[in-house]
Image 1 (tube, chains in turn orange, purple):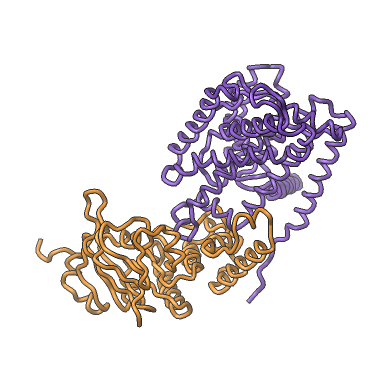
Image 2 (cartoon, one colour):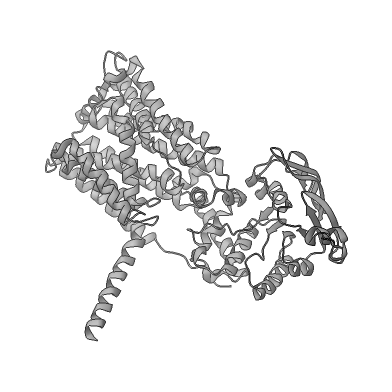
Length: 256
Length: 357
């Protein structure tokens, strides 16, 4: 298994605030990895750096050997990193179908001139985009919601639509930021099956932030724990479970 | 795997296209037979100019969700560039000297003059597009106001193009066209350019490329994450919008035959804003219908003179109070009207039921 995402000595400061210090991560292809840590530990910052919201203060991020530092988010997306957000960020006033179609911007296959002149190339490309989007929705059993607005869908379905939208980028790496947030216990079981299904059916590496230990422990084969922007542990789920530093970070010291 | 259901709007589009061409022909015929007198023709042409203004402003304020309130500035650029070109090409005058071509050649060259104005205005649009990469909302609104002032003040201080006295002589172009074939050419070109602008907006905003602009309105960050190049989208939206405003300006200048910087001040921008918000943000048909309504209203209230600026803003307040999303919200008339009919029908059915009970 080759290495897919490599993060080398990543450090990030917001003004005077040291958000991340010397984070090193090596994600292998076709792996499900987890990133956990207490609130405010800097987990989402790591994701934001990988997806290009911020430019890292120090260190390197590379995907398949290509350096991602300083690239715009949409370029990183086009290179194969899809992500979801902690709070669902679908375009609520556009239909599910449109949501999926817009994510095809990285390979539209026509320019503004073709749209103005309604050329054959334009029509062909639009048909292809819509057919592909429909095929994806079918695959995810979401085609019945194709013409609905995400706002009107149940929360669990919205999560699925968001993941489907991220996958419509045909990413090599999928970043999931707390996919189980706000889901009921029964939905969480469904989510675990769903992620397993995605992992089996799409040739993809998944990296997730999650607070639900059930999700993390069942799915991940490698877990990284960070606290106050520093890595405190990494290893298999069993290692992490018994690691004293992790227990301390989550539960505090034994003595009061 | 089931087959993707296709929304068939081809028939509707064909009917709309055919009826608008028929309408253009009828209007031109009526003008040619002098059933529409000069006043009515000029009102009609102002309706069209306002249609281009409101539907183009709608790209930025409606579809993209930014607040541009300097639209008249771009109109000024288009108006001045096309006027100066038209003076250079077709008219002997004190400023640009002898005409390069006989006025009769306007028949062929006039559309290019207008389009040149549009292109110049599109590049002026970069003045807002580039700052928009980093600024948003209120701050960008201030930049647009500043742009409006920069343009009008610059024109005010360029002695060569008449400064604050204004520029005139563009009517010659129209007379030149009429000398060749006696038709209401100005009306024809205004109608054709309006149709063209509306079609271009419809084509762009209906495409997946153009929907990237709408995605910015609802969530810019997730647009960027989903591979939409938001900076490119912003450049497209601002340049396209201001380019169309430039076309409207060029037409306006040639209808009036006289322009001065004061006709493109912030009040003119506000007029366009009123039309967009009246029609509903992000609704093409809304902004077209409200342009018609608004222009006629201005004409009807003309006897009240300055007092009309009490009534029109009051109307705006009432609309915002009772229908804050404008006439059609962010949807099109074809989606809104059937729903309203349905609602009325179900309401009357309920009434009947309760009466029967």
